[in-house]
Amino acid sequence: MNISLLHQISKPFTWSYTQAKRLYLPVSIFSGNSQIEGKPLSFAYAGKNSITKNYWAKQVLGSNWEERNIGNRLSYRIQNYIKKERPDCSMLILQPDAFLAHQLEKQLVFKIPEWIDMEIDISPPLDELCKLSRSGFRDTRRLIKKYGLTFEVTHDLIHFDDFYYNMLTPYVNNRYEDTARIGSYSHEMNLFSHSDLFLIRKRGEVVGGSLVEYREAGIFFRKMAVRNGDFEYVKQGVLGAAYYFTIDEMKRKGYQKIHIGGSRPVLSDGVTKFKTRWLGSIVPDHDPFDYTFMILLNNSPGLQDFLVNNPFIYYTKTLEPISAIWTQRSTTEDFHKLLHSSHCAGIKGCQVFTFGQDTIPDNWTDPALYPQPSIQPAETLFYE
Image (cartoon, rainbow, N blue to C red; front, side, top):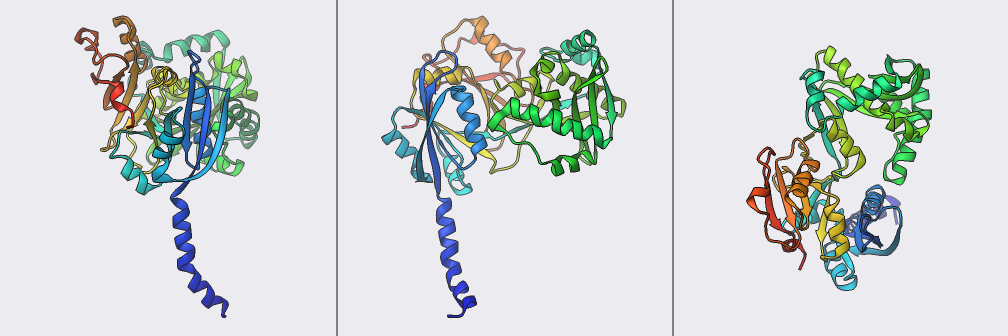
């Protein structure tokens, strides 16, 4: 038979096979203990993104967990399979295709973005920014003075190579391990070609750096790192100094906002907390496919421990960012601290889920917070 004709005949079957494969997702079961109270906790992940899978494993269970791969499963049957065959699993983290995602939005699920993009309004004077609640500006000013931190802006390739190989690469590897990837040298070099490289010096020695990209849409704080990935430099304020000096320089150039890139939607995540302290505000995301779905299955003590200590951002059907905050019985003071510590600028709503009680007394809410939280019993969320 003519090879070309054979190819034409087989094309529909190849297409059908490819489409059928998309309906199946690899499923892993993770088991360990919750990070704060050490309660037994298991959850399932279904999807093909290894970085996302590893991120959630570490966020939920820390560094000590076991993974069991149970093979590929038909995507729209995974929930029922886990509920029936693995009743010990407290939740399912699912990354489906577009069709299943549309179906999931009709259920009791949390539509969580892979990343939340943030920006800082840098139009107020620096002194005013320093005075704002939870601001990282004031503390960074102190560290800049204490450790003699200064900066310079360069476009020298030698300095870029030093930044890429001796700062960015070890920093990402040390900080994120297998939950993030470093851009290739050529990719980062292309970024450098239309960016400023800020070098942060500690008493004259280059100990950190950052890339600030110029685009038609504005300025973007793209990369930052410290020499050898040494976290001691982070504690000494080197990354904060990169933010501070960049913001000061961009204000001099007349910019009103600076985009500070993406971070994880879990508000307890270290990078996300760092950016919210720098007054980062969520930029609404309109990508309908870049989401992870969280489905609660089993109201276990381990899951409660995880949720109470890990508020997160999710999106409504109209793509509005909402903060999900979880609480058990506590005092008024503790509840106020929880609301303030979990607040993120740019959210369009705050949903508080309570374990073990139907509501929160009216006098517990803080009128200074916007938006005001809505209260819902957490028990109403679990999949039946």
